[in-house]
Amino acid sequence: MAAVQAVPSSLGEQIREELTCSICLGPFTRPKVLPCQHTFCQDCLQKLTEGETTFFKCPVCRQWVRKPPKGVQDLPNNRLVSSLQTRIRRQATALKKKEESKDLCVLHLSEEIKLYCQQCDVPVCNECLDQKHSDHRTISLKKAVQERKTPVQALIDEGRNNLVTYCTFVKSLRDKEKTLKEQKQQTKDSIIAAYSQMMQKLADSRDHLLSEVEENDKENMEIIQKERDRVLLDVSELSAACDRADEEMDRGCVVFLHQETILTGVMAKHRGKAAPTPVQTQPAVFHPTDTPVPVVLLLGHVTVQSLANAQFPEAPASTNDVEEAMHVCDHQPQAVTFGGQGTRVGKFQFPAGITVSEEGEIFVADRWNKRIQVFTLQGTFVHQFPAAVPGGQAMEPNDVAIDGKGNLWVVGETEQAEFAVQYTKQGRAVMKVDLQKSGWVRGVAVDTRRNHVLVTQTTGDWDNPHGEVLVFRPDGTLVRTVGGKKKNPVASLVSRQQRMKHPWYITVDGEGNILVSDCGRHCIHVFNKDGQFLYKFGCEGSGEGQLQGPMGICTDRAGNIIVVNSGNGRVELFNKTGIFLKHITTDQWQPEAVAMTTKGQLLVTDLRTHAIHVI
Image 1 (cartoon, helix red, strand yellow):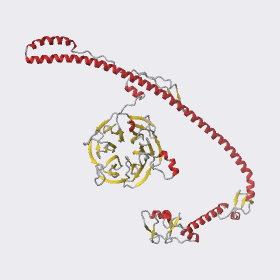
Image 2 (tube, helix red, strand yellow):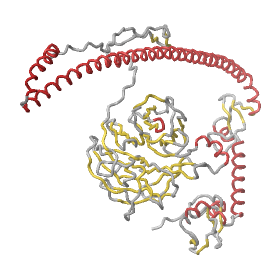
Image 3 (cartoon, one colour):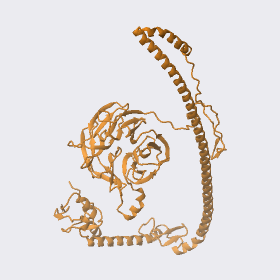
């Protein structure tokens, strides 16, 4: 049964009921009147008519109403309702101010305080006077206030004096804080300067030692080559003599009778050389000097003792000692490599994108072969399937990602269109999302926390490209765009430095932040999970922390960011705030895409050899 509505008890309540929207049951906001004279909030009508293009029904009388071409905002305003609402608000405000201006009794809420009982030292109303204070001495409120001014003023003065004391103390704390911060910065600057000198000395020592090793190796190679040439001459002479004797012995002619004399002379010459003496070379050996770095940590501050003048070892005892002491040189990680250029199973033609499942299955977007290939972490081929949209049309896959349910998302293109396609792990095409035909390469990532699919998009011509990130639900519904142009001119001016030029690869870290490699601006853009710009890092160049056409990007469990510095042929490591940490690899590769396994192995696609490296 429907709930029985209370009958309005006053004219005011009846008016308020007439000023209530029958959809949201709240006061009208931006009231719009329909041709049937029923009035509703603009926002309520907006939600009611979503999906309706021409007509909709009045929620009260069910009469059909034509929807204006520009939406419900073009319906006429109900000015009478707006005027009544304004008057009621003003009347309520005036009544509230009038009530607040009265001093009402706390015991008799409807009675105004008019007297002050000197015996009880409390303000009283007429009711209080009749009940408890009729035989007490009372005075007017004005006189009571006048008598209280002197002691209250004394307390105010005392309080203000205390405030001055407190403010003086707080100011001293601020001054102390400023002094401590300055001392901290000075100490940090001293440490940085001292360690810079230390690292320079280490670098000079390293270069000197490496030069000596190269020179020593050159001398050893010359000795070995000289001995090799000498022995090969003897081998040639001895071999020729034996071969000639064999030939003459087979012929059995007169010439053979002289071979014994010839061989006797040759063997006499080489008999003493049958066991060549070992070649004497000088191996490259390190000789350590253990000099500790004089850094003293004290409670509350740091003291650096003669860092700039510290003595460093000219040569460490062994490579293990060097790594344990200072990790002076970054070593190149060992890699398992598989693939190679070709069209056969296990070969690649432009391995563009890569991802890895929690079970260790590697999925590679084999672009020019128009397929997805699957491998184990040891490089063993598992299976492959064509990169085709539902219906069978083949496309060139640009990138691949895996969602929380184990399904694959692949972005790619045909000659006519571009798509984001969802596949099962076995390669069955589940659905597709149509994308704008742009002619630019895209990347894809999945936010497994929100179950969102993120696709990069670049539009415009080569002289004026601009990029953004499209965020979809798995059913293809667009949730939002990230990093695009702002319609508001002021916001557009502020965000100009935050815009992306040509976003390519994309990833989502453990906190849900979105990281995009912008190969057009040679930097990395970072947005939070809601698409708000946080920061960017990197600039064009070849130095440490500088990028040249960054491509693949991923993060590790600690939040560190791995970036393919494609133009410089390197893979770089940054911390979660974009500070450069180290070169992961500087091998002669042409890296394109990267992915990180749950066990910390890094997968890198290499366009130079059309191979995959597992580091």
